[in-house]
Image (cartoon, rainbow, N blue to C red; front, side, top):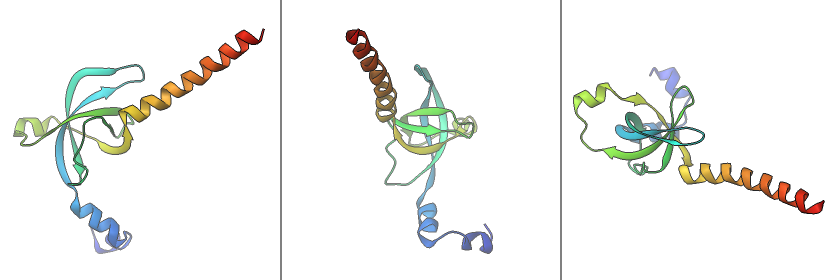
Length: 118
């Protein structure tokens, strides 16, 4: 980055960027109705404090979600060539599923109340 580009960032953001390091993780694709069985290698920048990846949601540049499975400690060079770049989100799989299920529960409650009202 050039000096003018760095000046756009605050000092705390620069410190956060410098703490991150690229890591290789195993992920599974997350669809609306299921999680894929196939494991995919992905590369992500993680802080040392945020290296827990199991059950976390990651997003690629196309907007597809992936669920983290495991952190690869010493990846081989062949694995590094097959990784897809993903970005860490603050959501977990359980929180995403709870949001989806809560919407279904409210619809069922409404239908049940309308059924018994007649």
